[in-house]
Length: 385
Image (cartoon, rainbow, N blue to C red):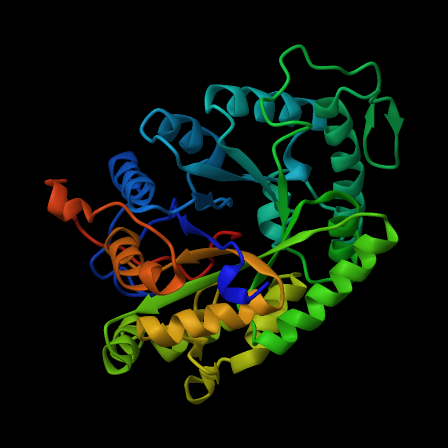
């Protein structure tokens, strides 16, 4: 099958930590009000995005509550909700997932976030080391999957236990809402191989992503399992290359060297995320090293944690780069761009046709009222996403 014939889903992102046209500054702050998040979700729903990712962290509105509030405001949109194993019991989150899946009509997906910021985790009472957290996640998902699958959930582990646990109201999606996960460490890849349905990578150069996917495939095959793959990346798409790169430069035009230095200290010295360190190593915090591949730009990673790279360029070139990721197994692209409301239109109107994706007519042409409010930039320490 040609890559052009392979299925591709494009998801969008809900900035539950705030939004705006500039990174690393409070200039033109746009708060994450419910009305604004609703506007983004409804735009994504009508424009043809498959779903939206909701991040987690102390600087975010709660992903579960926001998703439950937006379900009734959307029609087809799926919600990829952050699931943090260290912040609750498997049985509690099993009931949450089943209920949310039922009331959404089967539109819920779960993004497993083990966590990497010790201070953030300590706020939830989780003081385990990096590898211990993944061992805890392994136990959590073992119990969680058994409960929602209707299997005996009796389990006694080092970190967690469950006895006589069942569920009266099962989810619509069987055996359970699909599990998504991103983790570049060996411990993380082990968890992915044993439990998850979709493995996500941030936007590293294609050869680096392929090497990681190959390791995940091999580890999953040893468990008798197959895993699908997705890419978490930003998109800056304009009608011409020149316009796109000018937009990228403008996005970080308010970032000071002090803000960059503080962010890089957090990413490289404080965060325990292997994936975060891989992203930071691509540019080393230097403005003269931000182009790390064809149309691949790491400018967001100067101050944004998590998905710190973007595909930048014309619709033709960005589509060509996405096809290269498809060639190595990517079936889903979870995209974002600043500000998220306006950029949802740019991506749908400019890029979707080049990817063979269909979108409904632009909302502007159907009288949909776009009220853009004030704008805000994400803070230095970003949400896990």
